[in-house]
Image (tube, rainbow, N blue to C red; front, side, top):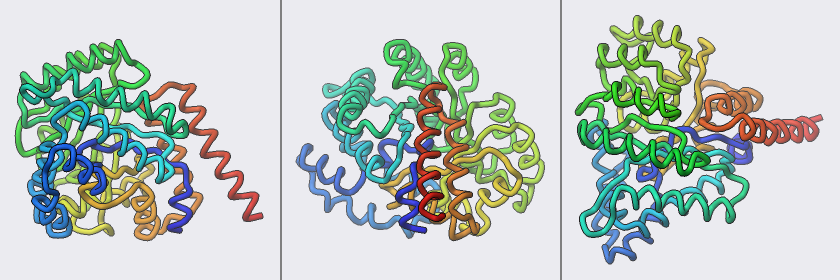
Length: 343
């Protein structure tokens, strides 16, 4: 099954750029910034000992301290795309919050560096299709959210082939949802993905459900067996909004106690639209292949069930009908070859 999951053509719909940086990429960035990686090793290796979601967020400080120039952002993006390509990911939606570093980089230069990496990767790695969701970090407040949405709309006009949506993310214990700002992005044609219910907050969760983003992230506190969550679980099923599920991330961050009672089980059994993602493959030392293998071993999914997960993920991708047909063809060709070999 491990070999099968690696060979399976997959779609990654929930990957934060800075959280996806591998140790090799971090080493490269350290050399560029003349920083000793050993200063960070204890935090990077402590992934199994995280006690809360808050501790997980601290690890992002490492990537942020190293991606302070357009050159660093370009190399981070390029390397991350290559690593997903090497894991046989055929479609990748990266998400990232534009950052300005006084004297070194503006928010516009940050996004331009990512777009430049996309352009180069289009030639170097033609077998992977890549898009960008510009993120709004709850913790940074209303003004920063407004700036990022304006930036997203401007870049969407320039590069509609790459900039496809907005991501509401950041520490759910701080800041707001900025739903009134997200409406402006939606009117402009951008898709919306919103992190939702990573911590208990019924009022906010209902507000997000009613806003009806194109996809939801995690929904760990929307669970039929957790106290007070039955109502929210029924509401989620009624929305039919696809949910991006990140097994390893949720268990490592302690927002779900174990893999066995992860919300994947209940959403899958209910036939709700779902897709698998890594969230932060660098932080949690995982890959999309590993997430598929974990789903298989934990929930008893066979090869055909995993292929169906990939096929359904195509429906939820923020891409064109023509590109979706191309992705479907790749997965169907893989399935046909698998059947030919089996028969």
